[in-house]
Length: 227
Image (tube, rainbow, N blue to C red):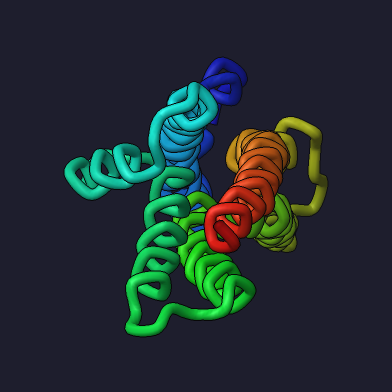
């Protein structure tokens, strides 16, 4: 390998050992999946935030709960997470209230709260989907790249075993090939860590808004139940 070839990253990858190439392919695949999940999660959280703000405006604008519920049922496949929580709670409340002889107000509110809590957990699981992959990518990729680097350096020095006088020109290409694995590992890890921290914070804030709404909505249902 000439000095000019050493600068070419593609040449370094082509001349790397088989183990290093496998590590590079694995890291590139993980990086591709990571970026795909990063964009998917960005759109999902953005849409969830917009739908949450829209439903909160409609809910607190004084509209009838029955009208909001009918709208949620009609557009069940396009509504947001918070509206699904509302739908589940109001449906359970209406069902318990319509039973023969009625139910105790506390039982009706508790039933609605349990229904909302179950829907809340499902919606949070959906929002948190693929976050574990981003966390694993951010924590494991540097070590996988380091493994490829260590293996590549071992391979480079082993090839010099029969050389009587090793020079920097003979050692540098092999070490440069190995260090590419560390660079790719960091390239895969850094965006995943940044995205995981950002999205975890955004989802936590959405979860807090959902929980606050459930408490406020439970109070509204309790006032209606005791009428």
